[in-house]
Image (tube, rainbow, N blue to C red):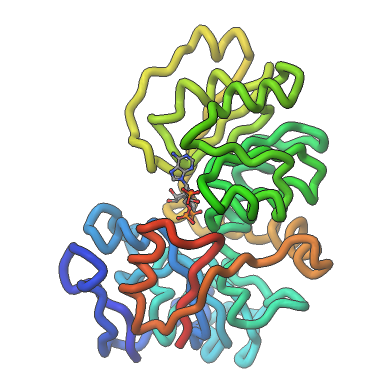
Length: 324
Ligand SMILES: NC(=O)c1ccc[n+]([C@@H]2O[C@H](COP(=O)([O-])OP(=O)(O)OC[C@H]3O[C@@H](n4cnc5c(N)ncnc54)[C@H](OP(=O)(O)O)[C@@H]3O)[C@@H](O)[C@H]2O)c1
């Protein structure tokens, strides 16, 4: 088969569509003939040599893919050859075929095409596991989403508002308007406004019950500042650095908590639990049309370098897909 390989750490030009060995399904795995995959920021870091795949994972980039099952390994009873699926991967989505534990598969939701379905696993699993499981979201709570126009952001805005959150987000430029269409009550321009002031002003000084953060160090102090009493800050990205001072006194006075999680390195058994929850609690909202995949553009797999350039430059809203 062919896959996008990384010839050496570097820029988008090191991504090469190359001949590689076919994957074989281990016990409990299936092999998917890939229809589409999606670009995640982790892929850009992997390309730069800054984010190695976890042990045992495919060396090729790609944390999610949709396609058709072409081979079923020992012990797999719930899925058959010919089933159309979408999958959460530890790597290997930028390829013609990929092996994946069957517990990380989801059916293609009704009303979504096979290609569009590649936009869903990573965002659905990340938003569900962090906002709903880790931060234990309750209807009516205030949810602040940083980077509301991104892949994660556009999904978090939709899922939060579908579950009855008051949703606020940060974004920039023309993307602010888009965020309102995905469920944000107010989109805050992080270049010219102070999100702490805006969220407090709009919530009668209450603040945010949950902050879904992708900036890390740069926003830590302000994220703690914006937390409501009993608020939960969940850090899932470090786009603004990894080290910063934390005012424990302020956190303690608010009875607040800070969490940080990564999905890719979780054991298969945890991913299986998250996928089962996503299928039960998120998939029905997608099938009802209340939460939709947000796809900025679809490029050919061979144009993975251009897709990485688009994502690095922040030219997109939602997800960038690669198709065979
Ligand atoms: N921990 C996990 O398990 C996990 C899983 C998936 C993703 N992630 C992480 O989550 C983050 C978002 O992923 P994604 O796929 O949504 O990426 P993305 O589509 O590239 O979105 C990134 C967003 O960051 C926003 N941004 C840039 N500077 C900002 C700032 N100063 N304040 C607020 N927002 C800012 C951009 O907004 P503008 O374009 O408006 O400037 C953009 O919408 C990434 O860091 C990714 O690595 C973590």
